[in-house]
Length: 450
Image (cartoon, rainbow, N blue to C red; front, side, top):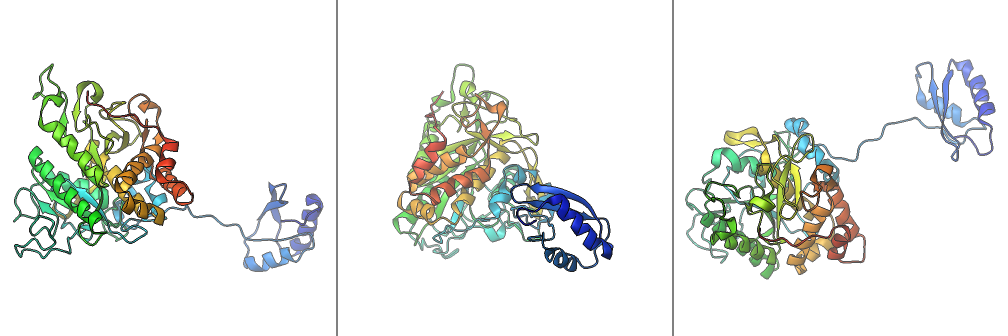
């Protein structure tokens, strides 16, 4: 930087004359800022001691300051997991930018964040076992309901099929692949990194029958309810659930003229999501994988008329919508299309379709709750339901808008955790309430059953 009022042409000629004697000849004087009188200098020769050159420059009367150029580092935290270089999905949702601030785990008030994984999976995988939720108020296998939550020996979550089998039934390794997206341990020099490097996953082992799904949700509900009622002394701070399953509206089980809503069990399934929302749980579900309008053909649970359920469609590696859609009943897209994740028998695999898209959103919700914001953590304690609804708006309000989603999803965009983090930061640094921040960015329609 030259002193104010100096003539650059004259000054640089002086510099060349004085420093040229030492073999240093400047190749280029490039003006970086006219107002700041700032220039970039380059040398034709190798500099043996850059500090000597900088000192000589600074001592010249026309030079205000001289420093060595350097390259900035992107403000993102990249894990050392070997497969991470293939995790295009984490890059596209801008997870690394959030990881610079938090990698998950607990709220600003120290509450342990829990994600309810609503299907079976082998949590003993080396990249998952450290993130399994454990009910420390229970004594394992003593046949007693030690914590009084109505469930006996629910130490490693709950198995609604057979309480003696903690692993349960996993459809072709589906559950373990979904779980890896939510919370495979990150930065442990092993495999992949989940959306959360640190989080507790509550595994609900089941066979995906509707009755078992509902029973599993009941367990999740009771744990969050108990947490709320005991100020965190018991239960679990479950902030979201993930259900990567459903029933297609054009299924052969439903002939022309018969809608999904005609099944008396399905409205109850919808009501369960409303029940969980009342205690502060924001549920996430996947829509169907056929390129059909679910507003017209139906889909469960997409058509559930509740604000406590986010329905996710799939976006591919080209960042384009690649599954079912619906302006009324499908909320946003998230990556699927072969996203790297954990696999059966302690291996690694990929997951695509909307089954892979939903856990990116569920994991994202948990990650946002771990931001260092006491106002958010306190809001979650004092107003669980309202905070959950606000988090829904923050997820949808932070999306990257996509032309191919116009008229096809509620938000018309793809998950962007960095933008959602910025919405949370707006709340944390302001004097207004969380709902006001979220509603400023997005007006959401009311869901309806088709």
